[in-house]
Length: 496
Image 1 (cartoon, helix red, strand yellow):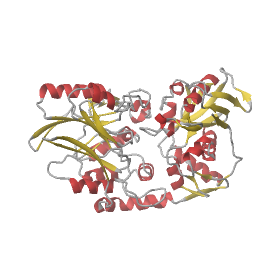
Image 2 (spheres, rainbow, N blue to C red):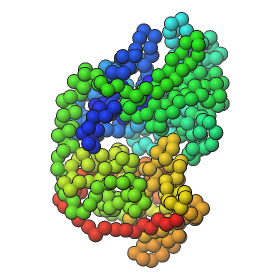
Image 3 (cartoon, rainbow, N blue to C red):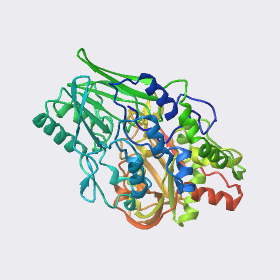
Image 4 (tube, helix red, strand yellow):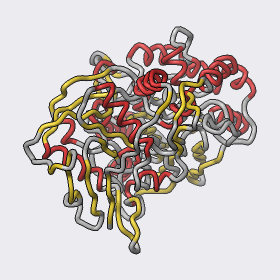
């Protein structure tokens, strides 16, 4: 099984150009090397979004056939499950993708116009064994996705649908094994049962394994964190993202063995050949110069760039304020962001702002603003007298996108204070902000929907929505100003 390939096809880093053990082409080579007549190959979702190639195709080249669907056919998958990012480009793209795929969908907890996309389960007869297979995905999509992209879709609770599927299988089928495919991860540590994230039901893998009897194997995804093990009576496994690993589960009379395999050093030449033309076009587009910067916008040390607010964030916030007219703006430094070199190209942009977000302007009070910043402040912790990233923001799923840094205000975070009491200074232009003061705040659509547990922003009044991709907004701004130059802003203090 692969999961969370995120449109990463070729084995080259878009940021550095160097070859790595990533991409569908290398994963497919490994799969084909291992495949025999008793092998079932599954993709567990998030295939359409996440790479510069995906951005180029769906924003610049959408009149062409979607290459990712055809590449999945070439890779020889037998079944596929949907992931939350497969809905990012709307229903037309989604259903064109599904119509092109030559293998069945197993996502049973999503309804389109009231009808499920898949049967509750499938029965496979492999080497004399009867295997029941069901698929579900995180039902949290409406908390993130733009409404127009999922207008005719309904997402049912993944746990309840998995429970119902297993109940039907056990009642109606005499299956030797039950295998679940879940585009979601484990919300608790499988060894200790300790909560590893806020229990929102975004991830329910721990609950599925521990509360639903009869599941022999649960294939997980979504969290981008490799893990394997056994929880109660269920073997679980989750591979790394971008085709870095496949999850291999071997079932025979001696039992069930699950292991993670790094992808091959060799890439599938047919896949590389198929994507070559559009990939070359994408590479040329990525290297187009947009403008220059007179200040240092490189990211060398990500943690330091968050702790001391890189001027890349100042720049992104300035762009958002310019586009929206808002008083205040907030952006996160995404994981592995590279920042901008002196001559800025599209490669810099898509390697720094990696999500397909749009912008939303909210009306917030001083009270809501402080609650927002208190939630951001939970990103930090203190260990041995040093400020570190709080462990649940680092593991099992990196949540660096949930630490926003704001411009338009000045504030201090005292990390050693209890959560909820860490903002010790909050001013605008040097003047203390009162609870009933009102401001306009520009944030991305994910944050505006409450994504990351920021419910205070979801509930705030929406002033306007800017339905343009943030990368395009940034590119237009750089093209307009030609040279980025401003006085660095150091408005955030983080202290022990």
